Length: 386
Image (cartoon, rainbow, N blue to C red):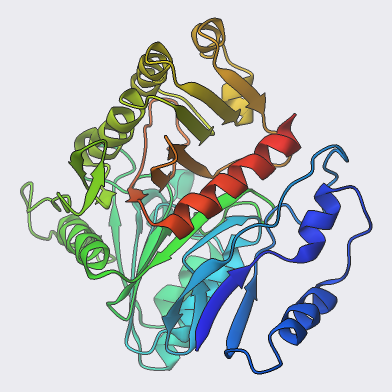
């Protein structure tokens, strides 16, 4: 059975300035298209930018199909952009049968909380790793109802400090049944309409990398009782070196934020680009800014869709003077962070929300489906940001 993730036709009708058809019509039309002797296909629809008031002049081509990752019969899109990330993660948790390990620096999502409680009732091994401020809020405040529900369900809970080398960085990630990784910019408790980028991956190298990273974080964290656990630096998750090729070099399929490794990798990739850099950036660090200038120096055309914090700050002036094209995001809160580099390397990650924070965990890919899909999402965001 072929699994595809498709953005609804009504999305592109909206982009073209014509009347948008309802979602059931999109689904029925596609199913009818393949009903006469074609392969069995399951469709998953992406809500990214659906229903927004995009300039009529923006003639966007249809978004490419998104490969689906199967989790016990549930079709999860290998990537997903837009609002409504909360129910997507909750649905993935509902599909798990043996284990759910979730790392979330913020935890205030009713849907994700309820999904974890349901999983625990199914005898799934549920573990939640969150920041210490969620477990012991400042000023004697109470824990969130969502966190209390997970605790009362019997799930295992540990916490890490909000600062320091061993901490939870931006975004959340989950390991589902030990064979699926979910990662991206979403944190359980973010505004429902915030524009996020998520990915579900099942390749063994990425799963092993995030599993090792989880085990290291879990070993450093404190249980709910506050008892000490293993001390010391612990084994750091190593990058999966050599799994990809970019510009004749070995490149990791993923990178973790410890000691700025993920940001170093993204900056290094940008700095060697020769033709194009298309990046969605909620924020900007000095390291990434210099990499962008390096790419411009090589003659690359650089286009950035900037979040409100970045667009309203003064960090963009050197980039604008160097000829970087910047489009302030024209919609709700932009949390997604991704890039397409020289049309050869796709990257997905997240940014810290505090002032001195950098890039969180990152995925890198040279898969044609990722390159096409990320490029299409960038064009849609830029069109909406003009």
